Image (cartoon, rainbow, N blue to C red; front, side):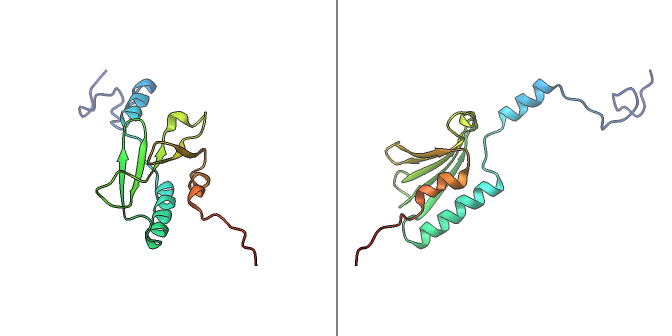
Length: 129
């Protein structure tokens, strides 16, 4: 066995670094949960509509080790009006996404973010003439 160029591998190929599967999973678990680009785009489109309607004025995004939270506020100094939560541990049970009201009540939960955000769509009303 000869060392070629100090690469530390037998054949001299420095790009052939293998990481055991259990270590790769541990590294992934150490990363905080995040909203992906598509999810964030859906949330920010809703946020823009609600700001235009003068309902919401501020937001915060938290990427925690077990969940990602998008909180919306009427004023920056208040508690959040709503929280849009992504919790991957609940993906197989109730669904990874949920909308939680200020009091902690879960308004909607599901597998698809678009359907969960539907809780904010204006409800149709019957108008009698």
